[in-house]
Image 1: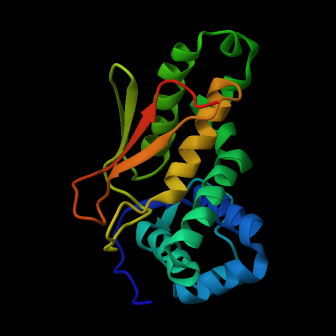
Image 2: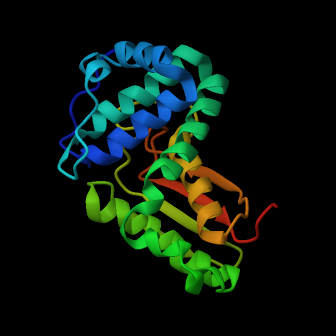
Image 3: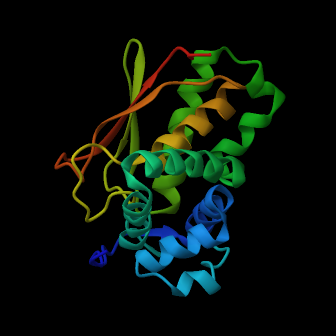
Length: 210
């Protein structure tokens, strides 16, 4: 896989570390090591990024890992693994971050579902906007929300035929389950920078599918 030029945009080490741990959980140590070799990031095999909030993990490296996943397992296989890794990324650590930590409190749990979503989805966006260079915003419409990633680390510097930010979709799905108290929600990526769009947009249906 050709190296992706560095972006100058960064994730905090901690989020990259959580994501890599989630990938290992989903595909095993050998699977992750193979992906890191293919992504030209063998140094991460021996040493994960440190567990701190320093913005030091380049979006290009994060994108290379996701591109290598699809290259190794094919679009369908890579998609399934990335969705699972996205869910694991949220469950492994992101749900304890800042604005989302309160979603486990009783006072939050008794709120009506739509109020939980109205608070919880922007809280997810806020975590990334505040801790990284991934600016994320949320717009609300009659029957859905649109979660927008303005500079996306998942597909940075890549070209794809259709939206390919599956780890972000999985992360949003797990976040919605956590915020809602157990519901499953349909999340559909409708635009993607890798396809040539300005932003990566995810449509979140307001009513749970289960």
